[in-house]
Amino acid sequence: MAAAGQGVYKKGRTANREIAPMRTLAFALALLGLAAFAGPGAAPAHAQSPGTADLITHDSPYPVPETVDRLESVLEDAGLRIFARIDHALGAASVDSALPPTQLLIFGNPQIGTPLMQAERTIGLDLPLRALVWQDSDGQVHISYTDPAALKERYGVTGQDAIFERMTGALANFVSSATAE
Image 1 (tube, rainbow, N blue to C red):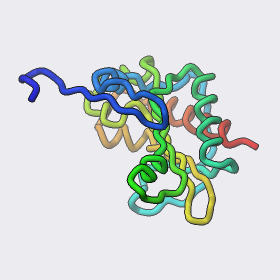
Image 2 (image 1 turned 30 degrees about the horizontal axis):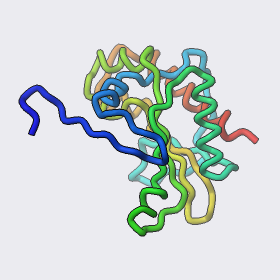
Image 3 (image 1 turned 90 degrees about the horizontal axis):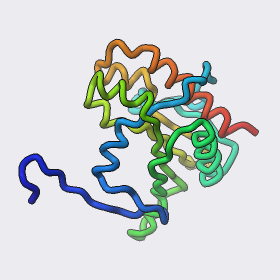
């Protein structure tokens, strides 16, 4: 057991990529950021159920792996850091369970995430940002992420409206670029 004030850190491996020690991931929570150059984005393309009201979901014409590859490329081109790519279907298969293609991408940048963490440290529970790319029972692929306005409200962050507006526009633009035909 760790002494008071000491953390307990573990390493893991997902989809053939080593996940950084939790200490590094905790630091990464402060590194959310999105490109300042992002403008207004498209409206969500997927109806929300009441339990997912804080999510924005867009359809993708590409299979899950290709959609994630495309989103990862768009994010990296915009200067964001990819912290992890987690293949949930691969995890399910490791315990002899089936799950339709489902992958999570964790990404961010300190220039925008740090001010949010300075304003309200607990927002680090949702930073860096995450995008879930998943296939529904009809075979349609979607990209879902938490609406930045919901994060602002959830954590009561004040004085950072411009950052949340930039995040909203940037995420919509990133997803639109990744799903463009």
